[in-house]
Length: 178
Image (cartoon, rainbow, N blue to C red):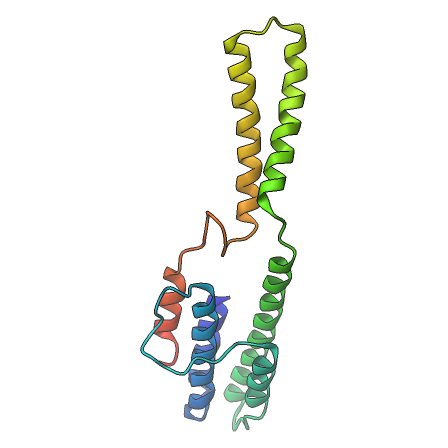
């Protein structure tokens, strides 16, 4: 999504100087989104941050659509910018939907762990219990439960133990509007 925003900024810059206020709006929207994702980090000097809600994106698309292209190149850049903003809106909606569907990880971990213990425990019914058998079965159950936990963690890249770093967001914000 950040790559699409940088490409949008480049297309608006190529369109001409009449898009300067739109580009500034895009930058403030992006700063608002990344500040929401990584609230403990600063993404530029104290500028006015706009909350990136659905209405703001529609207003941005309206401003791009109201541009009056004077030649074929400007018309192409305008159409590409509208297409990119549409893709950004779709990606943002997908992210909101995925965040709303997130399941709690602890119950998933416990169900998989207990199921694995039962499955591997049934294997040990035919073997005389000893520390090596019990240890290896418990280790196998823990490994399967851990793998399931990691898969569940990767489903929400902005929350939890494994998070997406903000280095790409810093790079994107630094290039916007320049």
